[in-house]
Image 1 (cartoon, one colour):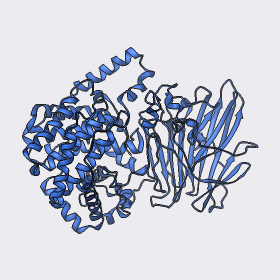
Image 2 (tube, rainbow, N blue to C red):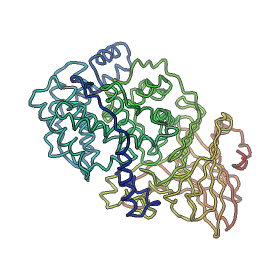
Image 3 (spheres, rainbow, N blue to C red):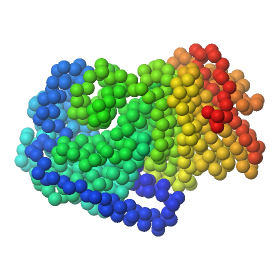
Image 4 (cartoon, rainbow, N blue to C red):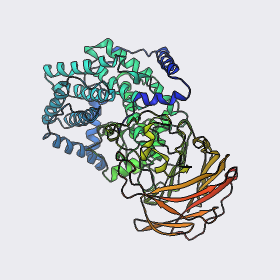
Amino acid sequence: MFIEVSPAAQAAKKTKYCSFIALKACALVLFLSVSALAQPVIDTTKFGQHPRLLLSKNDEERIKTLIKQDTLWRNVHQSIITECDAMLMAYPQERTLIGRRLLQVSREALRRVFFLSYAWRITGQKKYLKRGEEELLAVSSFPDWNPDHFLDVAEMTMATAIGYDWLYSGLSPKSRATISKAIIEKGLQTSMDSKYNGWLRASNNWNQVCNGGLTFGAIAVYENQPQLSVNIISRAITSVQTPMKEYAPDGNYKEGYSYWGYGTSYNVFLISAIEKVFGTDFNLSGQPGFMKTAAFYQQLIGVSGIPFNYSDAGGVEGLQPAMFWFANKLNDPSLLFVEKGYLQTSKFNAKTNRLLPAAMIWAGNTNADAIKAPADLMWQAKGENQVAIMRTDWRRYNGIYVGFKGGSPSVSHGHMDVGSFVADFGGTRWSADLGMQQYNSLESAGLSIWEMGQNSQRWDVFRYSNLSHSTLTVNGHKQAVQGDAHLKKASDNPLNMYAVMDLTSAYHEDLNKAERGIAIIDKQYVVVRDEIETGDKECSIRWAMLTPAKVASVEGNSLWLASNGKKLKLQVDGVEGVTLQTWGTDPPHNYDALNPGTILVGFEIKVPAHTRKTFNVYLLPASKGTPPKPTTELKNW
């Protein structure tokens, strides 16, 4: 599920450095720095005839051959055709806003036009051409594409650009003129208005999506507005380097799983489109860390098949077209190990995955039989919003998986989830994350969820606060928004795989020190070790783990969870006389989303002032009878 954050939210993080007046100056400096970057030289002789976006005539033949020879890809193709046949009976899109957004209409327009245009080009059946033309004329007749929320414009521009370019030879001259005019006036020209283009300076998904969509529009209508088109393509190549810098050095995407699928996909679309036209990507794929990011996305899927859905992330997205682009660029089939599973189980999500035809384009000569598991069982990301990911196996339903979150609540789409973790044993997720809540449900309740200050209403939302995450809460306080937990050290030793995070800055109001280490020991069990140090006052410490499992029994310092016919034991060591307990996840406010089937388990302790306290929590599968080994201090890990 791809949602968005406003550029204002991205800017909010800078409040720790800038006053309101200084913030405006910062924005000006950012604008000037973007403008000062070397502008790429666009060779206009490279613009060929239509179709010129992504899919050439030669590519059509390759796809037709792939469909004939490979059953798995034939299934993907057929899922697209099935959806197109269903679209033939649907009414064309109407301009209906949900809250302040037209985004759901733009996205459905992209799905319909992309699918129908693909179907016509591969099958030659005119029913798809006719239906695509109807969709294009319907959205072209809208008075505008809602520029106040510019993602809506960007996705609609991409939709109409693909349709205009791919269906060009079959469109009537009148339809061509209407659609081209809409792209130019409602998309390209609107993006030149400073009232609407603050995303040019953003370092998040807004920049990638808007520049990607507009570049498609500019390439599609080049002959009708050559200078404007060249300006927009040149601007995009320069501007998109700002969010691309965020991938350095390791490929980490600070906005997490779902937004990787959104921002990175549009970034790939931009690169692929300009490379197809100009024969070069102007070194965009050479930006530090960018080509490493596919490994990050793949590592986010646990052995349960569920993603590590920290921050504003949703559930499993299924087949991800951009992964095939990365795998082919890097000649690394192992990047498709998770995608292979989706291909083999027909998890294409054709009803919601509006970008699915791109998988057919970027498939290359992908042979599922040649895709082997990656070698790396551990992945750690420096840069902003750091995470560490550990596993003992890549195969579905096998082994242990742990995703461990550091970073900061202040990043784009951040939650107060510093120190949180998810954990899979085989096909079951035992420690979980509730993920995102739909934004319109909160905005319509009058909440200002894009203001990221410490006292923002955003942090009153249950799913956003540390109270709903598998982490610590001290004295009932919220984590420090500007806190930023960094990875101190890590090991990929298969028998002692671990990561240690310094969480102190997230709890500086109450604690002098807070460090957490998580390890997978002997490929058998998980230990979570916390080391804290209180300041001038006694502290109440709550250790909690969110779980979708049921509590089978509680026995003092141990607790049994049950799920899917399996059991997991939580055992606490280092806290004398502790009793494990539970907390409900019922929404505390009427605007909070429901959280059915979940519960929080853990314990609370009092720690006197000026005291150092350590405690270990072991996650022990019932099938493993071996007692846990003694756990040493984090400095000795």
